Length: 160
Image (cartoon, rainbow, N blue to C red; front, side):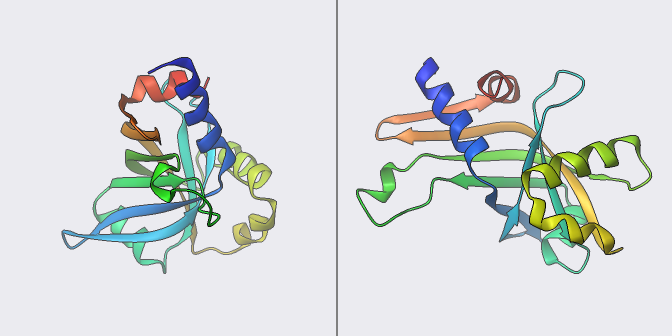
């Protein structure tokens, strides 16, 4: 992957706040829309995606039952040009709940609210939980004839 593609990938991930989250519901795919914030891993691993969600949401129950997820981040279609040429990345990840009593919870909350200030009030609800999505692999489409499969390490490098 060339440096301009790394820059494009980083701009896409950092430029959006909404993604499609794919989970497994009794072995079948289930896709929902979630808000996310990016947090650098404190141990030098790949960045993690923070998802704050209600226990009432089906995708929350799905992640608790099977932590394998897929996160699709795409440049929005504004109705001009070829929408198939729009940049997008599908990130395979493992969802890990972040316990409220953990040291990482407050750090994650600060990061999430900094990115999504209108969501701050959600932290007052006891049924909302945090998940860290730890990337394992990604497929990035940067435009026509620009498709790359990336390891977790390559995702980290692109986002530095």
